[in-house]
Image 1 (cartoon, one colour):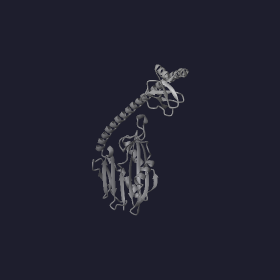
Image 2: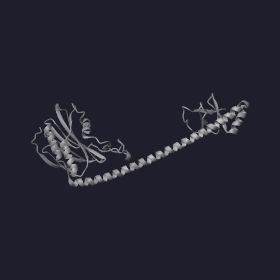
Image 3: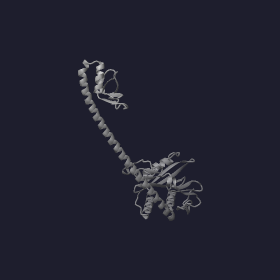
Image 4: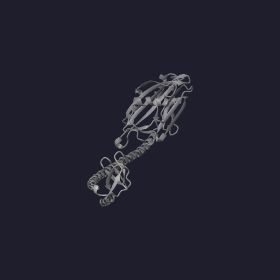
Length: 338
């Protein structure tokens, strides 16, 4: 069982010598610097020899987030091409890590959140680190306590989370413990461990250069997205303007055709009692007209088309060789009367 007399030893991350941290002597320890989806994450885990206590820090699944900026072509929920790059509003640590704990541990038997409180000690630690590095950031912290069943015993756990925003980017970080013993001592131990976590200055210099190159590439990509958005908007506006012009031209042609149709109908009505069908066809030819019908009604239309769409209520029509019915609720397909 964990005792307050445990001693800490400094250990260097083995892969890139990226950081050092003090962890309990003789515990089973795992340290790593990992780069999931081109993100950099410091990960640590230590378990007591009897397996009843463990501490951890870091999580490879925590994303880097961008504040939505619709004016820059970055709306909330935008696909950034990586599961660890999200466009979403900033979330304070208490709400963010309450959901995090539910998602991560909620399926454990007997799971129950027992408390959500501020973490002023870690808040001060993170704020001091930001000041040392000349960083202005919005920082929130929270401590989420929960419990669950483990091998017939009640296990107690604590997740300490931080969310911090720097300009248009925000991220999160986490550390905590799981114990079958004393939660007060474990909380004190994890806080002491995290306070000793320090990056290697040489590695940090190289990482800053890598970050600058990455940000330059992302800014270039953002500019490309903005330009493409601008071009798409311009093309859409041009299409809408052309459609509007085409609509107005079509309406004017329909009005002209209607006026012509009315004049033709008046002349035809005055003469139909005096002419037989052959004479009528001859007159239609002279006038460049056709007689069309829907089987019950007839009407006169401009000749020269293979089919006609007629409004049986008003007599308005559209002559076409390939035009699809513009409005089936108004126009009927009428046939040339034989």
